[in-house]
Length: 137
Image (cartoon, rainbow, N blue to C red; front, top):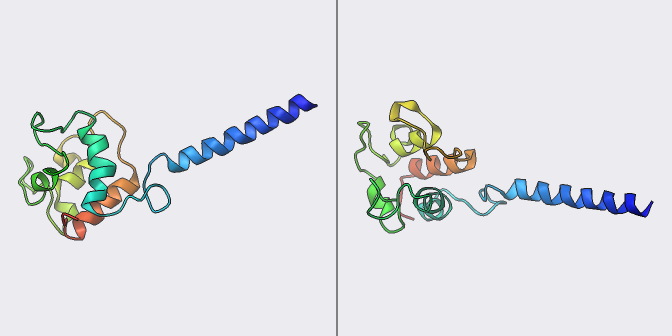
């Protein structure tokens, strides 16, 4: 009987830890890490870990650096290859960055390329940041 009790506790503990990990895996939202619709939050929670550190947009080696300190200038009011700005302040639906991360094929392949799509919380933060004026905040 003692073995069954220990096994039950083990499964209960495993379930609790698994549930906690799944809820906090994205690291976004007010309860999950503080992702906000500000550029500094997007930089530290999305661009640096998923674009720069992934090797896609690092430093001067990339077609377009998304490294902290230069990313905002490389994105906002800059032309894209798709005939729309990379980021059009106040207009996420006309911004290549937002369209890329939501997978709109009018701007080519979804980003991050060959990796898991951003979560809805992450794409919503990018959308809201753009729609709120794409400030360097």
